[in-house]
Image 1 (cartoon, rainbow, N blue to C red):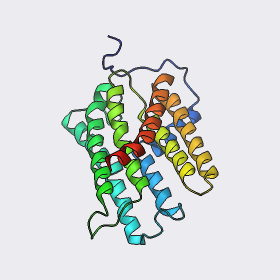
Image 2 (image 1 turned 60 degrees about the vertical axis):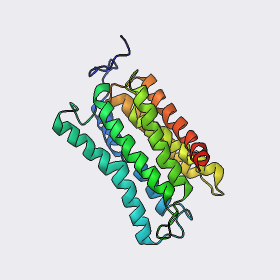
Image 3 (image 1 turned 90 degrees about the vertical axis):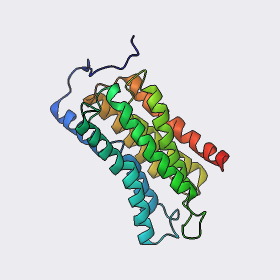
Image 4 (image 1 turned 180 degrees about the vertical axis):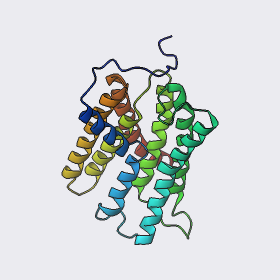
Length: 232
């Protein structure tokens, strides 16, 4: 019975000072799971020195638009529609039950994006996408699959999933490319720490749910490259 889908919980942790709660809330919104992948895309498009070196400014904008629509816009609109239709109680998805349909919706958008990016370049009128983008989109799809299964047992932190995926992605870049990623890794780890700390302060997540989210993000990002390479 303890693993049934739970309703809204009340955190048993002692209340934190108002300033700390406000800061944690701001961090939670800025680094919401639907925004973190877009930040990664901005880094790859406009900070990474050569990953998109052959792309024009217009091509970069189109790639960013594709990412934003599938990673952020469609998931947000899906949740708003579900709230309007009464399928979820709150857009904050505070219960395990509320999370089921939105996760499945995100699963659809992420799979579509990974499929499109993986097959770009196979026709004369499209340019191949860097394999790292295919790995990222595929890892996001994998997080929804694992996250949906984990949701049966616990209200795993979606913020922590995004944080774990982000840090692992940066580690993979650091290990496979001849660039100094020390600053970027440090920033990524710091952001991940801020995200998880913020969720402990302003959400009802337990430490176990945060750890589970981090593990799901890490495992999904590690699994994506060999899976995509195996599929060809």
